[in-house]
Length: 219
Image 1 (cartoon, rainbow, N blue to C red):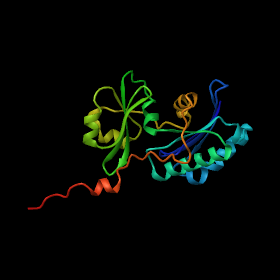
Image 2: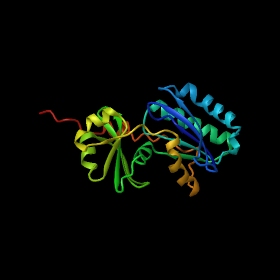
Image 3: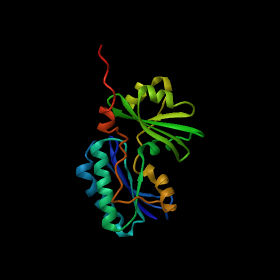
Image 4: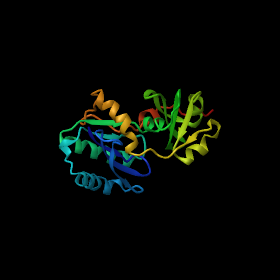
């Protein structure tokens, strides 16, 4: 299986080509420094395909990390993945960034993945192996209450500093290549996403939810 993997949801983006006929399966990778994905993503994909003498329609699937993370980065990656999937007539698979972070450690039990969401909030995911138990947007207090038992894993220093009581395990931001095992599980199961309806995984509360909170009473 030949797979194109895209991850632009973090601070640094990356694009990878993988071929399961080889061991290791990763055959080419390009890093997109800083927040340059909007300008560099599609040209990087083109360069990698040309370097490997692959065409879009030879791909088994396009896999993309669909968030949560940088609003712009998520949109850029998702839009590009949808376009490439449709142009090549190949299936699309979306991978949660929280699932990817959780998979970076061998917990042997529950793994709690936490990412910075800004505004004093956090993207939180609880996983048991590759099975998602929950994903939510939580306050620091709620993360502390939810992350009981198992391992807490983070890839951002500011998150580790904000949640010292959880003794989080700090790892590097997973790359597009790291999404391959999760993507393969979906591909082998024939569990693909619909490019027409797939949306970004923001885990943001809507304005309705935010402004529906009861106002503080003033006596």
